[in-house]
Length: 188
Image (cartoon, rainbow, N blue to C red):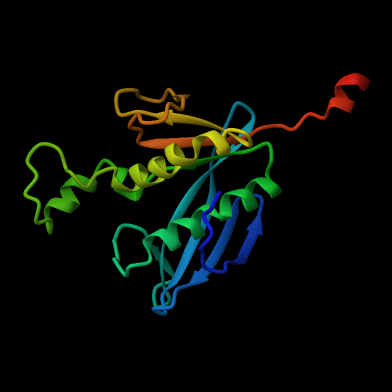
């Protein structure tokens, strides 16, 4: 699911509830990609894709700040490169992608330091999921050969719909398609 340029990742932890990947950037920051179990839906485990800078002093992942160091595309590719790794280990499970800027309390926190002077609607809210969706829209025809995508829009409460490229979503749910061989159908 990535482009041609990404940072080298290391698997830091892998168990049935938590998958942790790490990578270092040339600027010396250590980033964490985390797939953590959040619920079971339709008998499938659903994992959240989390991402952020690792703070070695606190042991925390900082996922609500934006550090513009000019390598955003490489970082996005690196984060997305963990998705096939996840599905290699969990082909029957699902992964949900949403931005930390989609949380309900984000606009209030953003207004404390934002220079955009937003009034009713925070212009930065859902910015991260829009980046993921833009990537998905651009590569949709090749990605749907391997994955099934559902989107959760702002207007719906908890109902995911089949993903429609170009539509705005606040989260995306990903399933890997099951591969059925022709031979297994004949012997079925």
